[in-house]
Length: 239
Image 1 (cartoon, helix red, strand yellow):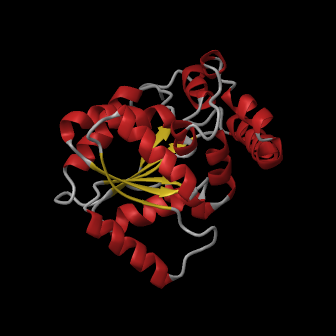
Image 2 (cartoon, one colour):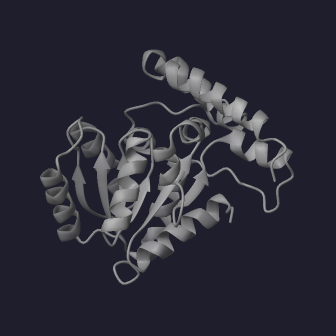
């Protein structure tokens, strides 16, 4: 069932507060690129099936829902804001967080930023995996470290769709809430500039990011957005 941004943050905090007794779960922030990948790759589509909590991290998804007059309507849940909202609510819950992804330098800046912004926050681990597929032994060792840390939430910033595969794997194999959170690490750490609020309000954050990192993101936005639009047209009349 679609949820608002506030409800999404409440749901993540609540699910994490039940760990380890209630077992694990995984959360994904889907945007136009994500849906374009899912539309063309069955293995990506399977990540978002079943018990996953999928949130619309992209204005176009919310607009499409509004134009279709869906009920209940899909609401925009921006990943970087969800990240901060959960930490803000955590002051009462006292959750234990693990940061997985990015670079050691970004993780150090991110941890410092979170501890400064949310005094007393419990960051029980932070790891930057190698930029390659991990071996089964490496994955087992990583999982053992996460378990030993006592983490209830694992935030994953490995890029799409890698982070979504990892969130599903962790959420189904460990008693943690695994959240594929995207660019929230870099934005909160201050290593990447966020789009101005007015651009985000207009749904043009993607354009700002493309202008900031054209060589890395041009293919993602050109082909991802085009495939999303074609998928919308193809499925417009579907129930």
